[in-house]
Amino acid sequence: MRLTSDDWIDCVSLESPPVLVSNDTSLSLRTNEAYTRLEMARHPRLRQIWDHIIGNITLNPSKVVIQIPSDLTSGREHLLIPLAAYLLEYPVGYVPLDTNQTIFLSNTPLDVYECVLEDAGEEFTLLKFSCPQCVSQSAARLAPDEVRRKLVDRFQPRLEAVDHPGRLEVRHTQETLPRVSL
Image 1 (spheres, one colour):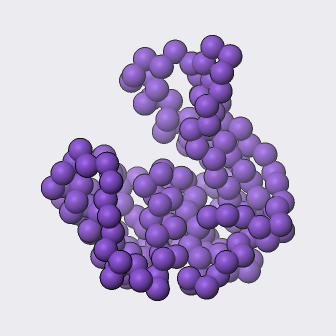
Image 2: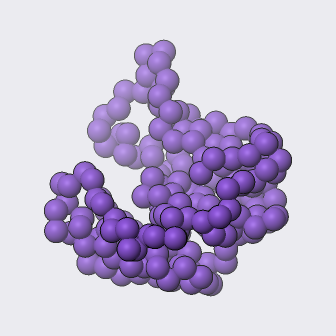
């Protein structure tokens, strides 16, 4: 796993209404030449979890499963959500307010993106995520055309590097749901 310092992920605090977390409050991390930016200023425990994961990857890069000790997450399970978004390479990561928050983005208009690999008439969803429209309208880098471009720029070269014969399609829809699962 190669981590870089690009500004790939933007974190969205799940307040009402949702707000983009300013990059000024982000904490840059450097661990064994692995760089990332995650919204950690308000959640310093994320750094301990991140350091644990990087330490395990460094010790055994072929290890597929990394168990995070419960003492790092107990009562703070909600902090794993933006971390998962980063590891799954979602350009938008949600940050719940706390562990007790169980309803997310209820009836909030969303921009929904789906990266689909098409090959020989078959489709495979590579990733699917959303961004609240109120956030994407307030940040040019999260405008639908920009997000679609970023997704193609990120994943198309990887497909070409392995001679994938199909094509990548990035679909954008707008949806409003009673609630969103994280």
